Length: 124
Image (tube, rainbow, N blue to C red; front, side, top):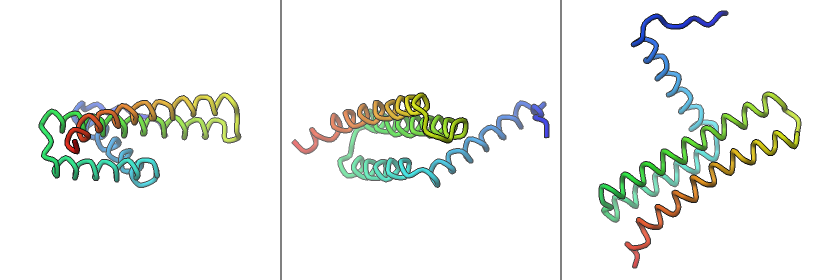
């Protein structure tokens, strides 16, 4: 089967959005790290309503959710691609996967810092 480009711009965009939603559903239904991050997200949304955080705090919190989930999705894609290309353990593949996981950690630590800036003053 040969790839055929859509001749209609609008139809092509709808297909792209459909594939993006399918990818999002695959991530949510198959990756344990995404499950944990979604649970944390639900808890933080609940905390946001409980503490009546400001509009700016909501924006920062939502941005952090999107950042961590997006980077985690890219990390998963890199790991799956690396495993497909080289299923056995290899030092270079391990190095690539470690760097990818490190990117998730950077995003997570930044999000934790934002969460602390939002919520710690509410407890003090």
